[in-house]
Image (spheres, rainbow, N blue to C red):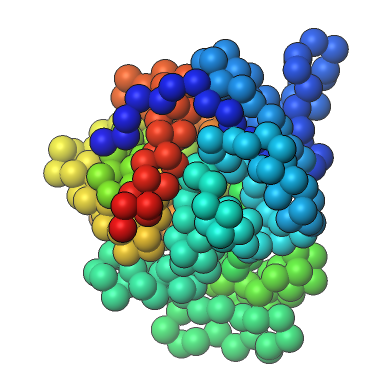
Length: 346
């Protein structure tokens, strides 16, 4: 169990364009939404008594090194979601922090690598008897030939992007023609390989997990949409995830999952822990499931270092479990410190 956290010097690594101001005054809701997470984390840590230095990072490691040498942080709070414009490069920053031997929050580099590869994570979890949708991958430049084992409907996503980037209602396809069109969209507009999965009709379930060796699973959360258009699928599209005006208009809600039997909740908790251990995830993460109509929770993806704005599902699930936002951030700091201590004791 993580120890209590005393006031610390915290170096907060942020995307260069998301360094927040000291106050929300004078900023529009649209502006605030861009850096809400960064503002919530920095302001809450300062209110908790920590000395926080926000550092905007883009494509160089040198500023991180210089800040470590001058500020001498006790720990780095890693809020980077990409490096050099690449989502999959975030593990390189974590690796660099490992080499500097400075404690840092969130997931270790190996866990980031295993989780970011959506195809690799599914293969590993299928081997460990976690239900996953059947899938195939189409790299850029490869002609689209649907394997016979994949029947319609299918859903087409970016292999590496997160935050539902590139996902829309058109991502669910019912013919080879539409499949080829959507794969081309991912290749050309998103610029990544495409992963094509069997579409699972059901509920969108999110499970937050805190911990290194000992894992604490937060209450099961669920995405619902009150006023879906006729014929629309209940999926976490880019608009559902990021467009606040759209969210209000169609009644997007993320809250406690209802009508789950004790046995099903226990199974989801077991799966979440097994997924974290298989993918070597630590710190904090969110596991996304698709709960099929027959009650089978299918693994969709693992999200190390997920969104932790005060209003987002991870923090809200923690709050429902008795962890205030301040306590949650302190717990994340404590987990980073305890992992660093464990390494020095090896």
